[in-house]
Image (cartoon, rainbow, N blue to C red):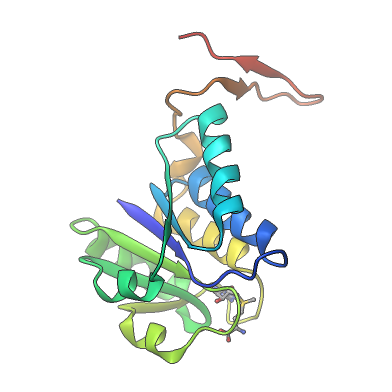
Length: 174
Ligand code: SAM
């Protein structure tokens, strides 16, 4: 089980980023995303995409992301440019994760130090500043060793038929 938690959301300014954290979590193999309470619009968009393109995938809003992190019964990975290099620690994380649920934490603005302390692992996808969406995508792909790319989707209304050129989307027959 992999849950992604999005820390912080500035309505308006962060709308697309928060939505993209959720869509990326879904597309790249996580089971659930937890957004802040004020990110209802992003939650609705992610739920709508899951309805149309399939799951299983859960999207929730929570009042206290910090409490979720503190009380998590499993492993907590916080993605940060200041962390240990993903290529150095991914093997150990994968080994520990085989028995326990994993919580992946991504920030929006400055993340307070208690999150660094609450995490079992602070992990950097390069030690360069970039984006929570990019960091999450690379981390999940490393964690799953690329197997998430072959995932099957359940209860989809429609699916994309891969094509060299053009766009083809077909309804899914039950
Ligand atoms: N400057 C902020 C700080 O010091 O906490 C971080 C803001 S950054 C725009 C938003 C989020 O992107 C971070 O909280 C982190 O989760 C993610 N992020 C940015 N660069 C990253 C990197 N190199 N590796 C992993 N995650 C990264």
